[in-house]
Amino acid sequence: MAQDTTHTGRDALISASELSSFVASVFASRGMSPADAATLADVLVWADLRGIDSHGVERLPSYLAIVERGEMNLTARPRLDDLAPAMFRIDAERAAGPVPMMMAMQEAVTRAAVCGVAMGVVRRSAHTGAVGYYVQWAARRGFAAMVFGSGPPLMAYHGARVASLSTSPLAIGVPGGPSGALVLDMASAVAANGKLKQAQREGKPIPEGWALDKDGRPTTDAGAAAIALPIGGPKGAGLGLMFECLTSIMAGAPLLATMMGPGNKPYHMQSEMVVAVDVSKFRALEGYAQDVAHLADLIRGLPRADEDQPIRMPGERGEEEARRREENGVPLSPRLARQLAEIAERCGVAPPAFRA
Image 1 (cartoon, rainbow, N blue to C red):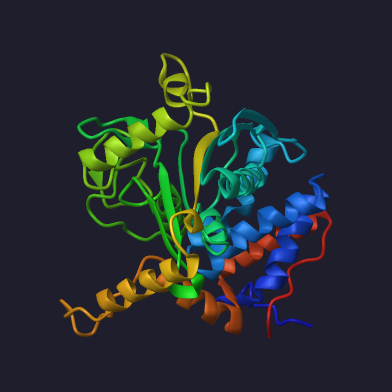
Image 2: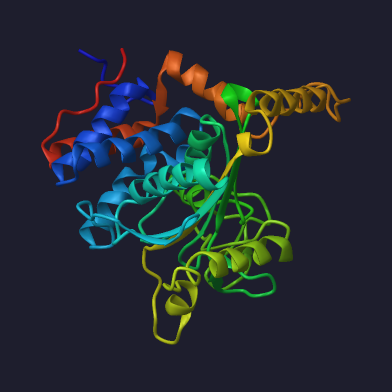
């Protein structure tokens, strides 16, 4: 029997496979197909393995709350509309984000293999999870890929003191680099909303410049943080605005304007654009990946600003952490471990088996 660590002061450890199986069983118990539940679990645990805990299984309680509010449909069947040989649109029908997102990336890769490049928009999806997952999947198959998106207003436009933009994510992946792919995964906010929520749960202060309180005043109190701030001021705000134009508005399902109008309230919905490029149409894939790796090695070898801190490539820290957690187990806080046990009981599934 696994040791019960949910009431001690130390983290509970669980294998990635056990955690993924548990998450999939929870969603399957709520009517989700086994295949879709496995996809959703894979995306969450991918984030946990890489230390992106704010986008991992920490999201499970909030996802179930979204389901109960009717803002995520676990039995939705996303619909693909063929627009042109290299263009498509997917109406997610409020499906859990990873389901239409993987459908979109697979479609983009398939079309790019024929056309050289392909792009699609996904509208009306629930939370997509860590968008780096999707571009890494494509990059490991020989495609350069990009994902960016928009959602509810959680971030202030530069110069404003109210929530007026999504903390729009951006991910770019190319073949080569650590573990076969070089992956950038970032938000247009200084800190993604998930990181703010995590700091609130842990009762930790946040750095200056991360957020405003509900009255639009700068704060370092995570409990008071209500509005994220854009990275680079007008630069991050500009990215968030243009991502809305290229996703929600492009897909004919505007989000920000709909939620920000008089008397309207934000609700849980997102939109995304995916782009895939077949590298082999430009040049031999092997040579491209070798050149990416060579460039990465040159940058790693540059004189360091701090000799005690290595120079890392985008995604490299996460891959190193994933190797450690694959071997040692994924650490979950005692609070989250208790929540998962309560969810298991509520859903009638076997509780997660933590390591002794």
